[in-house]
Amino acid sequence: MILCYMDESGTPELPGTTSHFVLAGVTIHIEDWKNIDRRMSHLLGAYGLEDAEIHTAWMMRPYHDQKNIAEFNIPDWPKRRQAVRAQRMSMLLKAQRAGDTKKYKQLKKTFKHTEAYIHLTLDERREAVEKVAAMAGSLGFLRLFAECVDKVHFAARGLQTSVEEQAFEQVVTRFQTYLTRVSKEDSQLYGILVHDNNATVAKKHTDMMRRFHTSGTFWRPIDNIVETPFFVDSKLTRMVQVADLFSYALRRYLENGERKLFDLIFPRAERVNQTAVGVRHFSAPSCKCEICAAHRYDAADPPPPA
Ligand SMILES: [Zn+2]
Image (cartoon, rainbow, N blue to C red):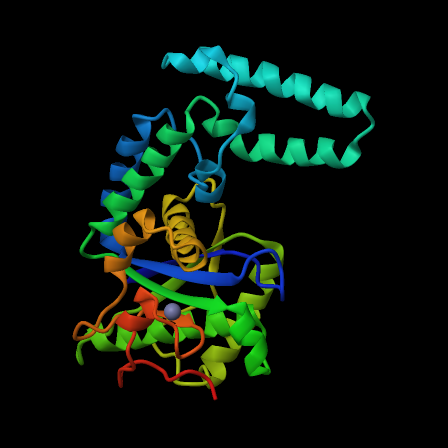
């Protein structure tokens, strides 16, 4: 049995706030789960993050409220936490007194999402994320499947589908192709999709998966993926957090040319004869990025939609 953990990065709306939408699926054999979970816990313990969700985008950004706090000169986590919490409390009170509801809400949201990481400097947070990427990127049994949609190109093609639907159908098709390829005649390998619980995505992906079970995707029947996706709480599921990191790394490479995380995770893209069939950049044919160069057309891979 192979588990495919899925997560996305960027906004699927056109135009939205990002130029790309990336849906990534990270697969492991069920028997490797314990190994990777143990390694992650060990690694994150060194950063005081053993009980925290690894949410890459929130960890990788600067926290301006840390800048003028003297406690950050020494690695005393309780003191740092205390100092940041006090600073945040005064920022919230200030916004409240000024009657600035928009700012108050924004601050509340940011503080909630970053609370678990406030004892770490930006460099320490980035280092923790890079270590997770390096660890996951070195696991020979782990495979990466992804659809990276350039939304300007997508809009220009005038397709009869949404960005999200195309991404999901592509990743499911590639995962099925992989399962067929690694299955043996007398012993079929089966897969299950595991996704972060999100009310809108849950309904859409469940409906699409039901349709794929009956009539296949546009490119092929879905024989080896069972069930509709299982939805889990990403706070509790390390592998969904790994999928979040992988999708973030792909998007930041395509949008900003950031290579550090990308170089660590891209070797895990499913390959057939050196061709990275598992990951596609849906963009203009003239694109010179590394994903496009590695994803040359291969007979084992579905062609782009007409
Ligand atoms: Zn490209």
